[in-house]
Image (cartoon, one colour):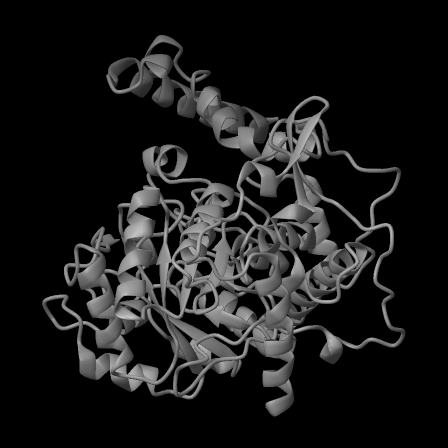
Length: 508
């Protein structure tokens, strides 16, 4: 009885202290007007997102990725049954909804087809001294060490090696965690030039050449902008900056890391291509651009300058504004940049108009997570896709939306040693492999359903968009291919590339 009274007295004292503090503070009107009980408002606000996710939201309600998509990724990465029962939950009358049209006569899938038999994409940089032949159509998008934990990068590197796909370093430069799994690397150079910068932040040719000479580095990507924050550089909160990250990037500790919002080395199409050529002189490997499309006129200007010079980037990675990020301003993530579909078609069309389409590989990136989405974007003009958040789901991400706080509960996007210790790179590497191969199998399944033999044969005529209930049109009618003497291709070009890819693979 005495102990109970002591406990009650202690609790009453705590409540009284909180009440006095609430009544005397002036920062929060709710707790000043409703002392003690007003704190429950902040508690429920904090718990709202997980409560909606687990108890109240429908399978297709959540953003940015709904439960159906996440469940498919989880099941695929674990090697479990990823089929659905009782039919699709998708609203097929939703305006903007796209579907792929099948053939009455699908291509027979050969029996006993192994992972090694899956088709390969086109060669990137075929004119260069060291062209690159990707093995997979779906590869790991740029996510920097720093934004991701060491164990997350380790898992992605190991899984990429096992699956045969490549991974991008993100703009945070190449760490030994990327190299640990011995996978193919796409080295990304952002406006801050992390890893290849002078003390005052300019591009250091000597440092860059040393990194690009590494055998694991297969390609180089100059990042103009990324989907979630076009017109703003990358952001790494100071809470996530460790001594190791600071050393790799060449930045100070104790303050937020803000990359410049653009390169100071160029400011128009000619100077951009001059910088591409400057980097190209350091290596015989393919050089490309990553961009968020705004003005179609700027894309056309770039393509015209490429045609005038007779050379340019070996690939262009198009990032839609749906692209994810660990930390981004709401104003940019919600309001700036074209969606991936529009941006992808704009780049594909501009390249075709100038007769450059067969010289430049186009890569799509932005909220792609399933095999159906991979196939759709290849049909719209991409040769490859980059996937970020889908691969994060494969290593355990639960969409807790805490990437920018250093408190990721699954250890994926945190530098907290305790939290990241729960992520086992060996186990999650296998899941990365399973997910990557599930994407490739679904892509090939859709290809066969269309009566084709290779994904590169897909084109805009295979995709139909719902305009309004009962009104659907093929994308090739909504966005026709250019018809002028400078055009190379359309569907025939994509089919001819199958022979090019096969010949190169045989030569290898």
